[in-house]
Length: 168
Image 1: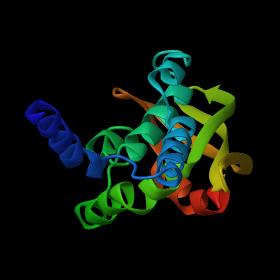
Image 2: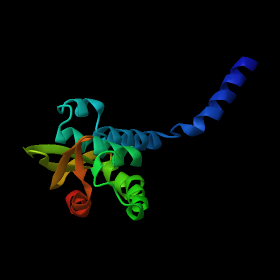
Image 3: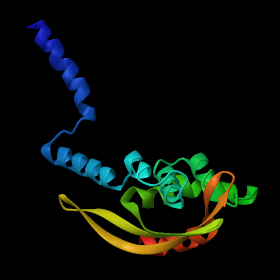
Image 4: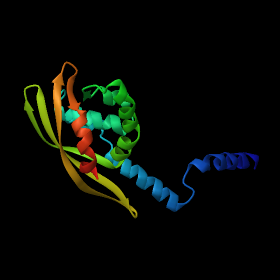
């Protein structure tokens, strides 16, 4: 009897982190499904040629999804000035990450011209509607990149200005 009581006490302490009702469980599962549908996966990165402009864009988006300003900085050009750096980092961990949490990029076309490239990206927004996740294309954006010794880097200033209208 004491063993059963001890097990029930352990379960009672562990339960607060778990869904407390079917409705809570459904909400948690839906949130997990939404995240699964929007995260740029390693397999999606690997599906793009190594060192390609398309892979550079997906790598940058994944860095934003994971709120990693250092990884994002490694994929952009020119490097933000000291005055811009705080705003850039705040964007990555704040507004950018919120948008990236519900939006997934899809590379539609890549045009390379020497050390420059234009990549047409379509953004797919995933939203919870009732007990379902629905997807719709929100817009397209041509992202410009430049090839450097560090690989393909996104010309971030223009992309940052145009991104809000492409993902809303």
